[in-house]
Image (cartoon, rainbow, N blue to C red):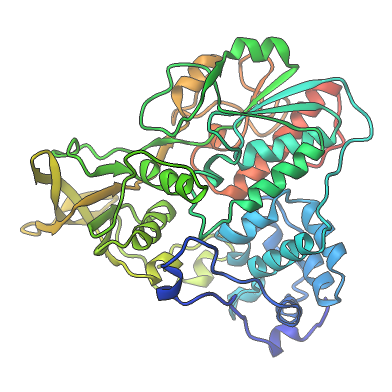
Length: 487
């Protein structure tokens, strides 16, 4: 390693960020990457642990010790090349990945884990700043054509890998701009959309064609973001292309079947968040859902709920409350019990720091209001026994609620897309396709492959990138008989 004793000499350093009350006034990114000296010091904390569990903790198997060593020795271009060898889009993961690699860090058993995510963020930002991230067009064309349905991280990763293998790739996106849930789901203060635009421009330089505003299939359900202006049938794609990858997101939200759900002011998170993304892009949004001056209740304690909290605060909400059905997790995990796996513990996001009342073991019983508009939420305390939820007697209470945002996760991909292709599904409603053995990522439909949330259900950006890359290799082998693409 760069410095064998670094892990004993240096402490973990968090990336600097703008103060909560200041950053609530805008939608720009507020976390700054490390400077050169800080990055070198943090990279020095990577110890010669013998077996780097972080590699397997990372879904894309980033070669973390190698690029930590290169950063320590000032070889940033080589560090960027090493990072890109396993991850097409480290600017995304370096910002929004929860960093399972850090949970698997060997140093984390006895001290704070190496700041792997912050170093990744530093490497890729330095790469863009120095002009090192450029198109890598294929030297030879194979003459094969591939359609990719969905331009989220799985679709983008698959498209880029296949274009670099020499195939002619066209990406179809139902919304007006590429990026999928990266574009219309994650707030701009967590991921600047110029980062997506930069990658799209790079991929266009590699020959990828983007067709936005195009819905593949028909009968798309209401309530899910869809700004398509034209449709293309699956049969057309299967006829015109040698292979098709369906890589859309798990966009079907989990609903809340309680009395009063029909009241105005009750919305899915993915009705609320994409609108603000559109406004930030300079578009006009008719009847935008606003949290300004309102008592906002967010139901769901995950990342999407946190994004609703941050966006509501920027709207100027009077108060924000977030409820979670599950019990409050411990503040500190039992490391000997859970390492190197992802631990369950209390996590406070940057949005929570900006102002939010959080409560756990709370179930919504009904919503009430007048003149068709929600005014309050009736809830109760619950307890969990033997994996079953029970209401705590005499625990019912109410909170004022002018806006209720449902952020309870996503149950599956949009079923009409799978229906249109005639793809078999698993028990959870995802496209059925294995990741092992012959025919990986191949569905039962002719020439059709599936990757990302479309195949595995709601998951992380880093898992989507992994699946996109692996699916690309399988498609390349399907078309050419073999593949030199990494898995």
